[in-house]
Image (tube, rainbow, N blue to C red; front, side):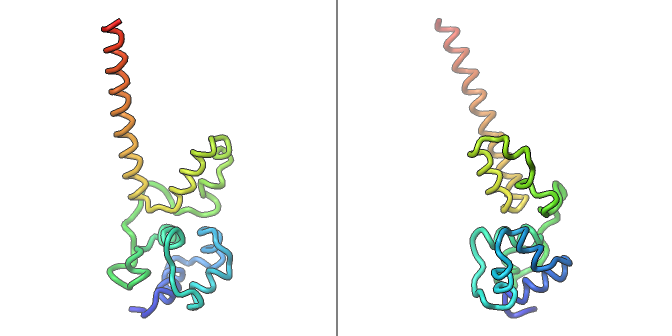
Length: 145
């Protein structure tokens, strides 16, 4: 086991056959930042960058940060990893959406697929609930009027 998260990040890049430049583009940070991650110039990786790095490389956050458990994230069958070629943020149709929906999509890009799936499920449940509530309200209004 490697001793630092920086070592483990280098191992993960090599295992995925990705270059620092590809990681930089995928995560949305400048190349010197990735260099700092890989060579110890940056001591902590946290927040959105941690989520995006792990999502892009399909590795577990606990493994990267602390060396605990397996490197591999659970397999994702729903969609391929985000790359410049299939990054939803590069989809020209995205610009046709209202800004608030664009913001939601951009936020979701950095989440693990399992979290996105759970959010979609939860939103579907809420929509069903409000649809039933609206239907009931309209039926009560018709019955009263």
